[in-house]
Length: 160
Image 1 (spheres, rainbow, N blue to C red):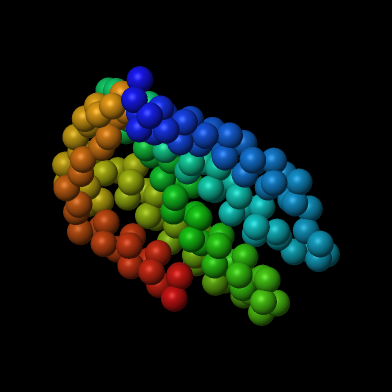
Image 2: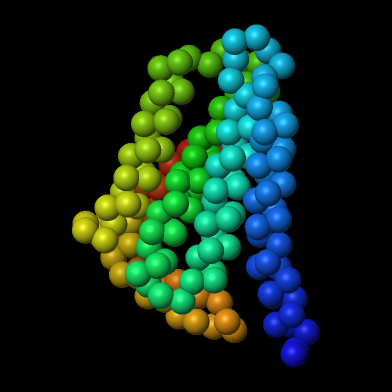
């Protein structure tokens, strides 16, 4: 076996370990240090664990029919990672979090996830999805739709 293929498999198969570490850290830090406040870092760890484990399953899937539900679960984590990261940073800087703003960000994230779930019907995120098997891993090729750029804009806005 070639060294490049071995390194690739090693890299891919560390994703479940990383997901488990995220879950352990999230559970360990779940109880907030401040009274009556939510620990957004734990939620960030849970969302990252869902995404990284979903991505691991996606790479090890060889049928498109199996890939689509796995991808929907993975994107549940992906749409909440920037939201919880933003809320964690706000909490870390001890700025006041307005509950309506938190609800608004949650609704936006759930709406984006809804776009991913309904993509096979409306093709707003991806207009076309193809699955290729390369070096023993399922690689997805997509043609991006108009809502994909909305998601990218949302990520960029939260990072700014």
